[in-house]
Image (cartoon, rainbow, N blue to C red):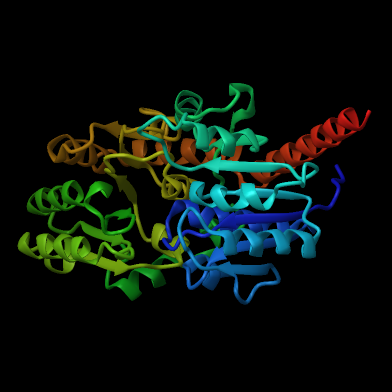
Length: 385
């Protein structure tokens, strides 16, 4: 189906580099590949800016000056005029406070907002009502987030939909990776069993439980290796150091490898046999679908939106968070049943193909964009009449 080519502004000024920021950048890149004219609003000096600076996507970099930012509003307003933007898609809620004023008087331009994390406290005061009155659609990346938005935000429930994050299956293809060479670069024997995790070095990602599990398993099976992929995020360097000190206190030696932040996740996943994700809270878990897309069986905590991804007993196992005993027992059971590992891996890959293929996800976005543009045009014609 041939779709109309649009001029789209993707917005995410966050200075962090996690799932939200990666998805925003990935969405912009994929829309560009589909011949849309895409520009991106990034925070000055942010990882998103660095990720896109050498691309063909036009960049607007702005300073994060706070919620009340007249200069930022003017910069965005001028950019929308200059690039003749058809639609704006915001990923970071803080940016709505600049984008909404910048869209004043531009009723023909739809505004989409993707909610990547849940909200604890209701945001139904007058100022949030003014902001969300201008939003045409809110995307929750999981059903959990969709329900959370409806419960906590001043927006018509009919405007809140669920579109999950996706994984680029052209990139996450283990046929393109030399598993043995990746293992050799990490100092891991080609025939060793490897258990991995990924996420920034933060306690709530479940690193304590992962490391305690590694300590217990190495006592029983000293030939098993463990990979932890991730680095410190800005402002959390002390916490990352605490995690690494805790790991050293367990004397895991060469059996544990901290890779730091890596962009080549497909290589690191390909070196693993089981992916473990013991996070305490997770709205979605992008690394989960990336790991599953490569046929890895997973053991994950059953928090928040994770059960929407990992089907317990079908594509992996779910365990309670903050419980290294159950985590260890479940991983050992999987290690002792290779056929079960293969069954989980195969079923997981099939599920990703069906539900989380990035091409299908972006097609759903394009459908939404076109529908909102039609609604805006009907609205304008109705008011003119």
